[in-house]
View (cartoon, rainbow, N blue to C red):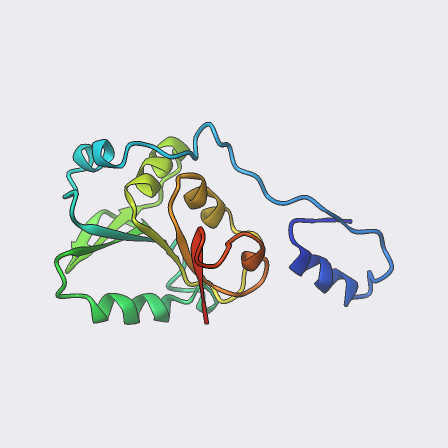
Length: 169
């Protein structure tokens, strides 16, 4: 059996598949696309202020799926809704619209454009309460963006706490 994280490997060992040989192959990203890009040039391209802190989260279906932790996004954006020095960028909405200091961007299928949006970000906020080896985290990190996430599933195998991200309780 091949699994993309030690966390999932342990779950397999605790199942009826116990005793089977397990190999680990982590999910991968295309590093020719998901790489560090010129943040200031991209901010000018998308008309974002260089001094604004951009906190990005990806929410395709996130509001409807309680495992994605949308309630934490709501709490954070509500706490900072009057802070114009912070822009929350929500990728995966159904239409482009601005709500207070939240900018909703429709789902992005073009990986090059997605990498550009990651690259303008200061932080990726990943509030999933259950995940294995999420591509969103890998892609953002490939673009040099630190990730704040919960210590769940395979995520602690990807994020080195206080080195390339932050593991929240």
